[in-house]
Image (tube, rainbow, N blue to C red):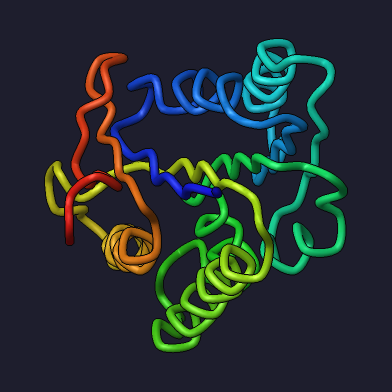
Length: 189
């Protein structure tokens, strides 16, 4: 029986590492869906570090948007799918449709794109018999961002996380490398 997990927490809290540990215990084969783009040298190095940390037997799908439809097309025989991460997926949508200065931003349009992307992923969860481990950041715990674009990003990532949280069996909040269960498959909603 498949089980869907949302892994959230701050930057470098151990989300990706724990997601991989869970996948190692789950039915094989595993598909790792990477949403990051190497926009600079530091990010390229981070991506390479993540690749080295994964077993070579896992499949990899690198996709920046339309994650749900890409998984449906290219899942193969994977019984476990890690999506790492929603934070960068939402960022990719902002890069495609946003104004970096934040001056001429069409917030309703970007919100529509983010919601459509997450709903496409939710549809994918329901269409295939595989377990999903979805990694995302919890960015709403700090200061209110100083500019409009950053506030919109925080708000839309929060909305994306809420949509996904309603669809998964378990939620784990990662704090300093330790998973704290927030929602459990063993307990009614």
